[in-house]
Length: 67
Figure 1 (cartoon, helix red, strand yellow):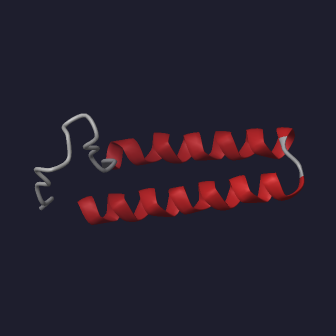
Figure 2 (tube, rainbow, N blue to C red):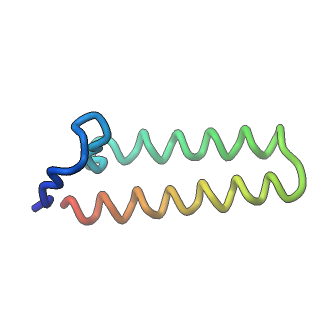
């Protein structure tokens, strides 16, 4: 059950990804990581990979929490 946050405007509220949305979300993370691989170098590439990895883990854990 998701708690209601009345102080958060409706525009900002975002629902967690559902099971059907997990695969497309992960695919987007993979595509962005591949683009970073071919377009960035050095520390910036590693920073993007770490950020995307964190977002992928957060998305996956959120989908587990929803089910």
